[in-house]
Amino acid sequence: MVQTVETGTDKLIAEVEGAVGRIVFNNPERHNAITTDMFAALAAVVDAYEQDAKIRVVVVSGAGGRAFASGADIGNLDSARGPSRNPSPDDARTSRGPAALGRLTKPLIAAVDGYCLGGGLLVALHADLLVATDRSKFGIPAARLGVGYPIEGVEQLVGRVGDANAARILMTGDRVGAEEAASMGLAHKVVPADELDDEVEQLCSRLVANAPLTLRAVKLSIASAAGRGDRQTALDAIADCWASEDFAEGRAAFSEHREPRFRGR
Image (cartoon, rainbow, N blue to C red; front, side, top):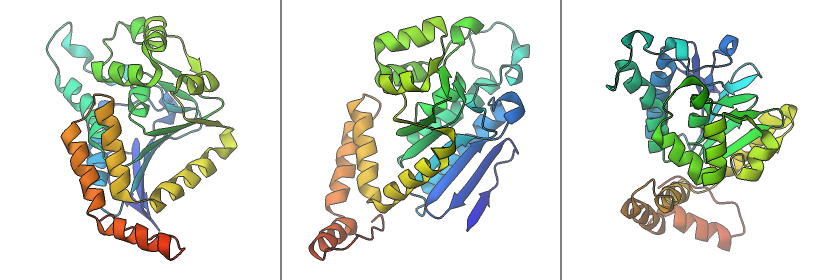
């Protein structure tokens, strides 16, 4: 059964199916360019998914088959403020979405089909696993627009693809194809477009079957190792695994030669 989650905008769709929370950028006539309303709604949905114990995996994708997200909707941003070094209300609303993704402790999958650019790539960089179709293109056109790309996004990009590849993407504005993105470590798997949904569903099934507390500890530990998270928080999450009912269930299932039934506690 699919449960629709109210987002406050028809340009961001949120649905829960079983243990999977889905988020879809739904602005296809603009290649899923992300408006400030969409960024604000994204933050609210991600925070709700984080608090919902039934949800074990989150998937983010784009509608229309032409783009995951082509970036922030520049025309929708606070164009009237003129030159200023001070954050505008739109700046704050726009930053809330990526900030919420950074707080998410559940596995995040980005299902990328088509363009994944600018602010769209900023979203995708928060994904633990990124599956892309072979027709996908990645890039950051900030230098062609005179935009100061968020430092958090630069840090994520460098962590994913290294200094040299990040410099090329950011300084030239070049678009990178899916296979090259995979060779850089930006995409984790490349599939034909007609296989994307099946690949993501299989990945969701595998993650949902695993121990939620362990997945949380792994995610926090990776963030700590990459300099994006607190080490003590990761250590506490690891300790929670050893003290959990799920650890007892995992041992019992192994001894009884059956699949474990993890409950996240």
